[in-house]
Image 1 (cartoon, rainbow, N blue to C red):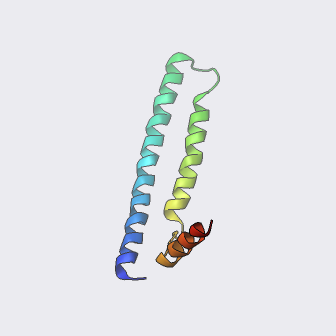
Image 2: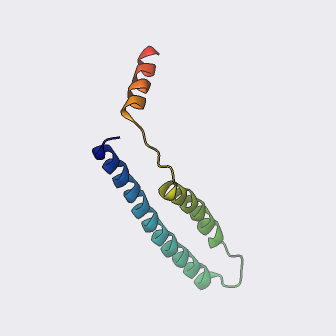
Image 3: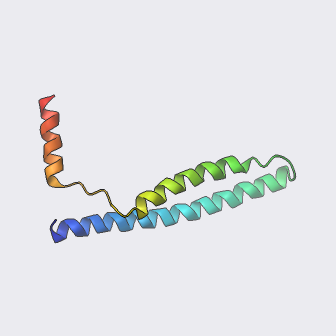
Length: 90
């Protein structure tokens, strides 16, 4: 790979990492907000915010795996050309 292509891959990986960190902050804020609503409306009853917290946690897991995986998905020009040729044959 050329330096320019490597820089582009590095830029994308850094963006994924920054987006993941931002997602964690959003997850925390939503969790606190929903827990606060639960506490003010029905403390001691069924803890319904767990569903949103759990669902967002699954999203955080996969976003983190994508951002911090050791083998970033690098798509080369030759792969793109091969896919274009495959699509032309259809």
